[in-house]
Image (cartoon, rainbow, N blue to C red; front, side, top):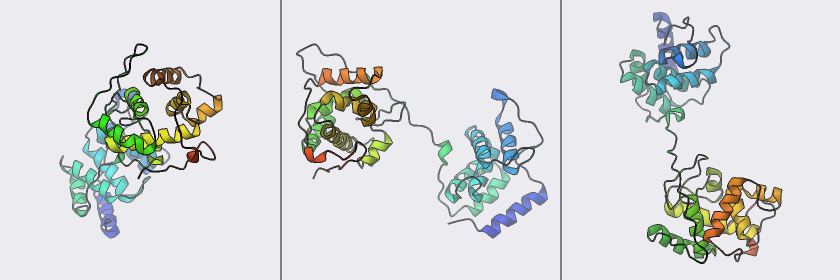
Length: 301
């Protein structure tokens, strides 16, 4: 439910009449790292109200957010006010309520007044305050001596791969090799590029193969195996090219007509093929798309 516009207008007028301000807008903002949260609020207010600088709601939001992250009530209130009035962002009462609640808990009077108006909205944290996912680096699998087969950890993940892979006509041993190299069997792994879960699916690939939760082991495996099935069809079962495409993307492999000359990709292919020594794999011909970015994903029953 949106705030009543008449109530917002009345409260805005009251604040202006009583001379309430978030900070001293005449105070110049300190330089660089010396800026504190109060100075951030002051500068944000200048950009919000075009006081001595061109109006820039995006800049104001960024500054208010920086102050809010420092737990400054004026920063929380200012950011909430931007969301409550749709200044530079889509109006969002739930986010505004969250921020007004934070400021009100620190005794911010104006936030307490707004908190009453926002009581019907279920608070939601603003995107700029959501902590980034924890980056968990996957350990590199140990190199195997020639003739020795990999000994993957037995358990839920191993069994899930054995259950899912045949439905997509992909060798479970190939899937296990990708999981070992991508995440080291860590379902919570996150790369610096935001690849997630066991098979390190980036958000775009997860959406492409209908993965709802990349940190759910079964969802992640299904999405990763579906992608491998598609890559095997596209590259006609050529395992090294499939590995290269999984790491660098289909377009890169097409561009270089083979494994791209990226050190990371070449090392990646070497590690996959060290664990899965077959250079070719059966594939579904009816899955071959018309172009590298158009696929027909056949979901397993």
